[in-house]
Length: 202
Image (cartoon, rainbow, N blue to C red; front, side, top):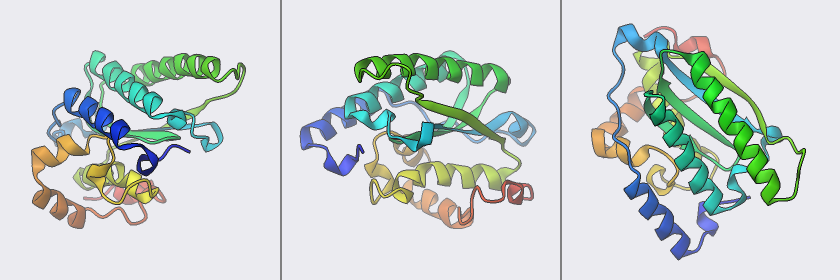
């Protein structure tokens, strides 16, 4: 399985250069009345196989393509993270159906490309997307923390900013490390995802 800590120093430099070059501004949180159009979307590879993480180049290429697809749709991407076998998005879109259709097409294209590269025609690469709309400010910030903490949770890195395939650099630049630490304390992720309705109340 692909892991950041196993990359050569040159591979790390190249990816970090790409992140700096393709960095996108971190959007401000949505207004309360728009929270019903803000979603936490996640998608996983079939049986959690590390198809995205086949190589550092694939990780980088997929991340870039994913971000470009979202930008072309005019959606506001608040937080994102791509891991070797799944990814997370916190996004504002007025049409979830249209947005997920775009993701479905991306999954189809990448399945075809990756199976061709690995001579594995017919292999199932992706599982279905899951989505949850953001119910409150508390839910929003807990999701930001969850998305950015995911690489640490899965033990790919020890610190958020060590993982190149996420929005954490833009986020820390926007809010500052001190404020990010306070947000982490105020909106903990303990038990996040086990009871989605727990985030309904502010």
